[in-house]
Image 1 (tube, rainbow over the protein chains, first blue to last red):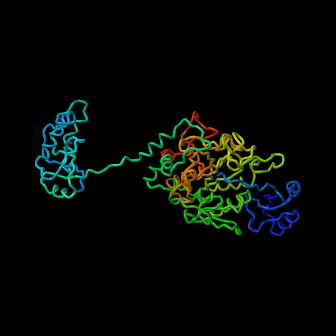
Image 2: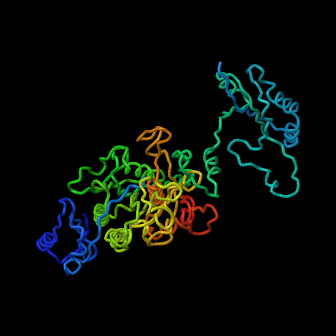
Image 3: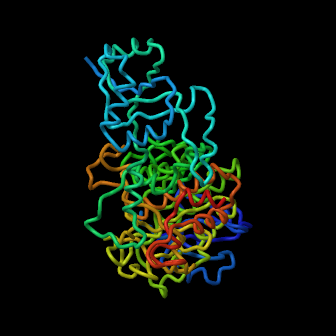
Length: 73
Length: 450
């Protein structure tokens, strides 16, 4: 399932990769981190229970679904 | 031998010219008599007098200012006047015109065919009634570009030189054809198969580009094609690209967004879905873009209750259910769809919105032969036209581009305010309405307010 995971921008690259590995999340090559105010958002493919898994992980600020949209034609 | 119609000016003073003219108006035979008398010395030129027009007195020599008529402004009858020359409408062989021009005391003027300006314009306005209605399948006839431009009221803005020049519109969609439309930049993810400007002419994004250019034909386009299926992650990436570019040079000046959701996911299972969570990262990124000075226009959606799109899930149909996610944010301009008769198109999603209740904000025209249709770039027959709130939204983005080309310092808040304040009310509404928003956008009315 695709998610948008928001983490603190204080995490460096290797800390971020460790975190994503722990959470069994994969990023696609062309989906880089997006700055959002003080944080960073990354689109990942991860387990369906990612929100529950990260509930008590201080490194993770929020997890949102990355949902499919439709063109309004 | 070709005959031409001319206005023959017979130079010579005529006393009591108004009385003479009145008598000619009252009697065809008197009119004929006066005309015959005026051209009696020109019998060799093959003139035919046109009796549709009486001889007309002129009181001024060419190049001179009219004199002696100023008393006509008074409420009492003025004295009659002497004319200096008289016009007669007649026809003659084309090759004799030069000969006639050489005869003293006569001047020959072209009797040109005139065209009634904007006949179509008035007919179109007459058909666009103010009492509303709903258009469902089979839909009524689509509109031509000319009709929509007249309905939008672009004429005076264009005549003043404002046509969207120097304004860049970002189209976040599935890609725009850059051979047909003026794509001058944009962004695609590094490994995306599609680069800006490389989409086929039949793409949804190309339709949006055509619709931006209806009001703003000199605007330019940035193309932000989603990678594959549009999704939240793709959207946030595109809005970040917009922000990156704006940081560099202030462009694009606005974005057009004709996509969204067609159902409401279960809130228990997905409390953080962007339909439910106003703090979803996509919404926050959209707010950042608006705060940076770029207006964001979003389609209301095609899940109106009268004839919803077949893609709509039952959870997302009708009033209160069909405008959600980024198109229900207060910061954006949300667009409903009407046809050229000012009827709401029955699939146009209805408010209130999920986050901001007064959604849609405005309505605009859809069902237009712009990208699709006979003679249009993507071709098609008369059943093929730009449609959906997807088409109405870039129409409004084009209107905003046109306004910005005249008033480049307007903020997104000011643009939204003027579009709302100048919108044309339809049906019984006096303020906001769940189907039309605040009314149908109109360029002339918006510019008149600025």
